[in-house]
Length: 415
Ligand code: ADE
Image 1 (cartoon, rainbow, N blue to C red):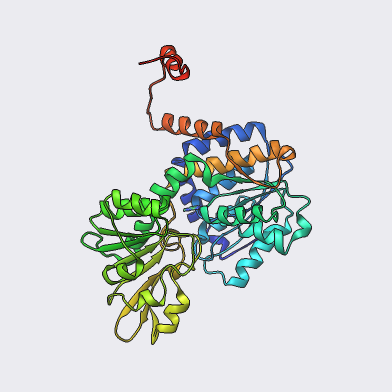
Image 2: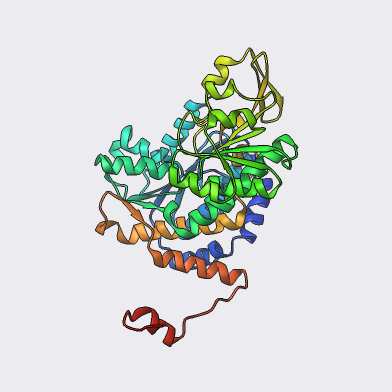
């Protein structure tokens, strides 16, 4: 069963999937193993992820492992219609298209849940949240879930604290081979990619304001600097603010940074990070975008309130004319790397999705022993993925000698 924009687009989608597959060596090895062992035989996996080519490779890997797949997007602007069509052609249950309304978005999440999944794979926690609020009849069958992103994990930990969480969740975001690469180098490159593709403007010489200095903010600031921008960081966490300063960036309040920025990029996981008081201080022509999971970091409500008129001036660029200045919002304030580009580079998603695939298997093998809590990914899984990735890059590393191991383990041994 499927509901996609246009099934005839599948060939273009298939090309994108094949290209992605070619650059995902770790996930390909896992796929071969799954093909042989069929760990998901008889299992339905419900997925809500950004439905683009790399995600399709993950879904196919799980399908090859014996799973029935029901999939939708996790953001109304991140589904690629040709990829969704290709997934449907492969026999997955697909309910997704780019530009879904809010109602359609929730209808599609519900359609995935209608397949009564045993396991959920989520990005942003919308599917998990829906089961816990409106589809509680499904709780009994669900063995657990895997969550991909920082924002989702924040929501889940709040649920855990209130004892509202009803099944175990694997914190895929917490894996080193996920956040150190995906959040930092992935968001760093793909956010800039989205801005550059959409605006066709030069980054060198611009003042780029990065809100939030978590792993995503660090990556964005690093890449903007690499392209020649003068980078300002805003933060609420004193330690992160200090780190940003020592990394060489100017750090100040948003109300101050608002005066200087040519391009603003939010990556905080919080809401209303840029709002009315900030818009009022901005320069004519300032560009606004978001790299956090939800579209509430740049307040569209305040922009709409202030604007005398709103129009699309170029694909994916909305102009808000405030009378004395014009401000430009990219990709409706949704994830700029996915709404305005193709998401993270393939090689980093190779590791993120290898983590998802292995976490799903871990959950299936261990759910009876697990409690309704948020669980860290086993360190051995991280090591396994890192070793395979290094191997695929042709990199060999040193090993400790027996003497060195003894030295490190014996607290009596001096220098
Ligand atoms: N492509 C698929 N999932 C993604 C994610 N969570 N972030 C960026 N690109 C992606």
